[in-house]
Image (cartoon, rainbow, N blue to C red):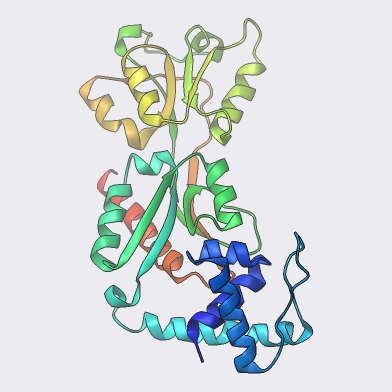
Length: 300
């Protein structure tokens, strides 16, 4: 029995669309149709109702009956692959979404590990804010997201990676006194922080919005590297992950600002949809957890 036809059956059943299945499997819609027709001929049953138009493709009663058996076959086949040489078993393309905090810390170590352990695996990488990455994971345009999690979705697996405290920092050029500061005092400078459609920005903006006096000015950016540079250049006061600024603190480029309030820690997960089974993502998520721990231990 053709493995690719069985895999195609799972994707069409999951996504309810030949077109979406073709995008997921990096092929054409006619190829998907041909595989399904071939599988139906091989089994001698009709698996899908094809109503046409914009209506989703629906499983027939026999298709629903056979779906669990096909899932079991693919699961067992994947278990067999795992027990062979990982380097040769994993080939294809992994669509990886990455939060910029991770991109600026241990992502290079993870990519090196992927290359060493799965040299036949290609990686298509997207660096973006968690809001967009989460949509990609849920809609399956991304195979794996390293993001602020966990994601609340029945089919999504969340593997805990790391958590990073956030600190207020500024250039010594601003000459802020070494004492506890109220947020009203910090609001005298532009607040350099995460992009508007992120959890840290929402939390920080809400806190400053509750203050008396003129509203705070926010310099929000999707680039943490840009936020760091703006803080070093004394443009304003920034909130950045400690893991990104330890070296700058040691070199005197930045100094931590004591405040009566700091944003919540950042909690990251490796999140991926496991329906249908997603071996590349599962393996990479485990690698990411190991690399994150090694990085944290090295920078403790």
